[in-house]
Length: 518
Image (tube, rainbow, N blue to C red; front, top):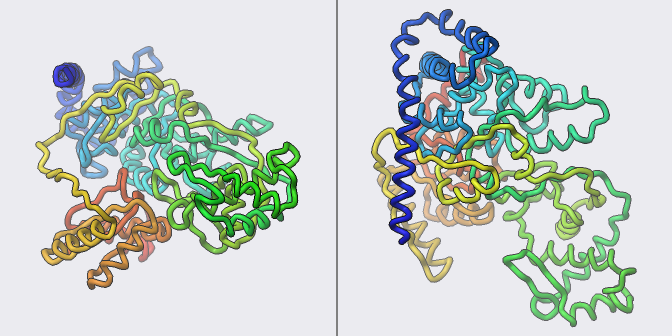
């Protein structure tokens, strides 16, 4: 029965691709016409398209011409002309759907087609990525296409002031992360005067790695907090108390739910330690809350896994991206409890001023589309929550990557020994190697093991994210060994043989060449 169901799904996807192909063919048919234009004639197409929209034509009407112009501009500025299958992906995105495209099929370039087309309305297009690194990379790289065609490009990253954010959102096309855009929306809802808002609306969003943002993180709440007025002394006392408790005897852990609870023996110890008759009384609710927060900090939250400590500050590591979330804090006193545990300054507990989930934020857009390498498995959720359907876009060339079966070991030691042996063996042949790990702690442990075997390597994790661009640029070089957390996961483009263009651009920046020619 399941095989029949899969076959039917496959047939319906093929039919959908054929329908999109007919539209893409109209774009491809105009290639020679647009190739013959001078730069000035090609650039003059943007005001011409805007005029056609004002005269009553729709985006669908001008799509073949706009896509053809964008393809030609891409070839002239970044040396890449979208393939026919990428044009199909672009049509799919313009229609407000999800394009499932395999790794390496050029999703970044695909997004330029619908972004350029929809930006012609002047209402703004948001291209959403999973981290600042990708947002910056794509805005600089693909931005050359839009700027050549006379459009403006903005970038929303951490540490921008309100004026810079407002200017970025006022651009025709704005790149940014889901976190930054979500928080900007919350802050806009807290201002008194409309002139102080930074966003100008939610018309069209193209979401890269859409399954990560709209499904995996869908219920993740974004929270803006204000400083509370309660003393931090109780966190220190609760920390001292729980550090003496024993697992199973005084408390139990529910690993899956990330929850802890005191046993009867633990409750008795707490009542004696804090000289209260019944810790469950309403009068003792605050004390009980502090004890449970301290217990969670000790028993569940792990240093170099859930957070790192840098310069006397506890910084959260994003479980989805492996990146540091500077300035973000755990709620309900957990952050303070971790600060007490790590013996750094305990900041006052905050109170929630505004909150929204990614799910509710992205449902505000009039039109939304997305790209990912894996979406078909979550199609039901995309349909039910966002009314988005998924189209599997064919690859430009047949797949040559080999996907091997998983290897399962009885112990962690056995697993890591096998990983080290594999690294040593393949490194001897000069084959570049990327090793994925689940967290900072594991990446550093594996680094130590292969250092003992004399294998030179780079480590990419939340602690040394400053070197990210350089490490990624050379991870495909002959003999390179790179150990990374999921920071180097979604959207990271590792070129076999290394990336000489990156080294050339870096050298030009060091020599103070102007940005326009880099």
